[in-house]
Image 1: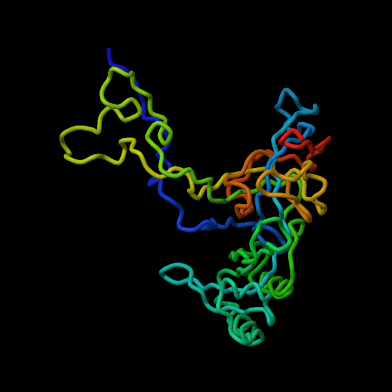
Image 2: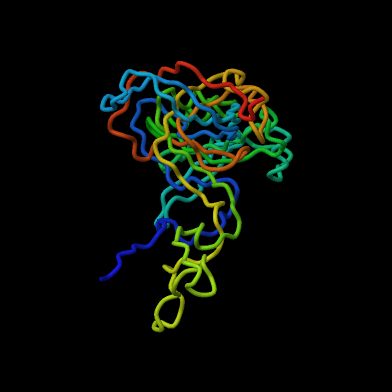
Length: 334
């Protein structure tokens, strides 16, 4: 009788190699149909996890209207600074950068990332975009984080490109001009109860064998020389090891996107969510924060990018989730 043993592990992400950068890259921005333009993304740092007691809002759930305990992730989310406006035009080879307009006096910490000129000619950049507004296909902004306002032990800011959605191109350009050189808080981009996509680089686990990396079965001790190796490397022909054979290699430190994570709360004072003694391997959350239902990729201190949902759920509760309590007990039992 033939034994049925489908391949273990997902083939959705191959090759499983290390991410190019510790900062995730967003390759797709959804089309947002709205009258007013808005930023479609935000950046924050992962502080840690706790749990909250909330009122279940899913109508089909047997616990609808009752208190349920949910794991939550706390993101340290100080305001991001809008440093530049970048305009794109459509070509036969896709989107190409047309021009940029930078703020007059960028912060000193930006020199840790880029080599800045003595002075930016902001007016010329804005004028060039305005004169060619009919050619512009996309308006995006360059934003930087402010790690000095967090418990992340670094001064070098993270830079990201964020698209502006909603309205017309002219309205998007006017909105970009209005926020150039200013800080944007998480409440200016998202709202409580909204679903977002979370993009980040997962926790690195180094070089792992096929049992942990692919979930293959451990062989009995009498089988051959190894118990934790794959049973066969494949047929004689083709005379090579196929990609589908589980092999040892890099595990973790991969870029991943998790869809439709719900924002439970956007707060201003981090003391509301910081447990006693602070988060392990992070510390205290002092300023604005975002509370996400469930887990997000990456370890503590990892940069997390939030984006408007690419494929939002059909049924979304109109009201913001009601939080009964958030656990502030020390995770170390102290």
